Length: 332
Image (cartoon, rainbow, N blue to C red; front, side, top):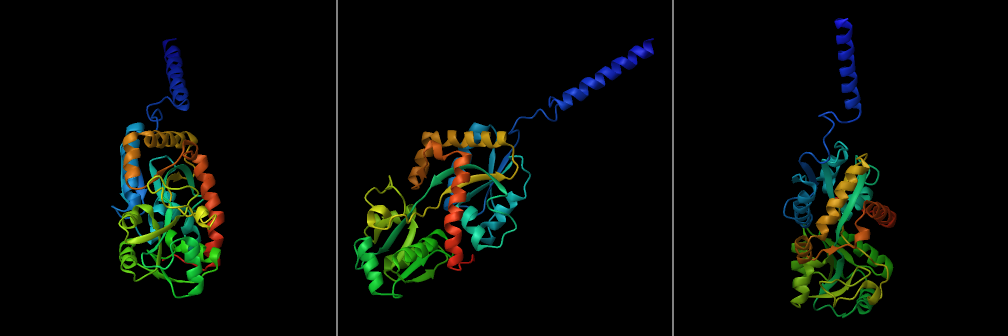
């Protein structure tokens, strides 16, 4: 009798343990995301613009999520090594990709990749937008875009645009400008923005398309000319510069936006928590000031959703891939 009762008790205990395990209340499955350190992969060297923005955002997201976020700089392969690392990572929300328009749009058309920039990731949130500005040497005989186009047409193949590398935002903006205006000029690749800007200030090249954060000090100093911001609206940090629409080149919009992605298959609940942390981060007054100080445009709330990032990425791919392929542009 005692043996039968004992066996029934053991069986009942085993059943309770099984139910608890299946119900997700066992110790191993009771962990709520996030329960440990999160790695955010930046596919560029430390100290660059994307790295700086990622660190500002990660520092504040840590407060919202209650777990540390470590920035891992994985440079190389035109940023494809770092992005590829995230594509292959477990879809658990503990490895994230902090990337840009270049890494998750342009590279899909210019490089042979071992991952799909659109289908191997889950969008989390767009962080900031950084429109480009069309600038020229101060001695250029044109004071506005219409005069610039007229001068370029009168001097085909004689003008030059400096670009910090092939297939970047600056280069592609120049390609679009040529197509839109039916002008021809030479592209001069540099190893970085610094050397290109030095030559523009010195008058050795004629044009550049650059981030506002890089060129505004030179514009304000009168060392170069600013013709237009390549965006739909004027910049808060430089409201005196007209938009391309106002300047006579409607639709020539180019910006180097920054965003966060997770590996494909990451649970929606995890994406939701990460997105909420981004939204809270971008509402923080200290974060907003730090991003504004480096000329980053913070997006409206409805553009911070995961769905908005996914839609934007698709739209940008549909816009830029045909342009890139028609021009025969390949990544370095």
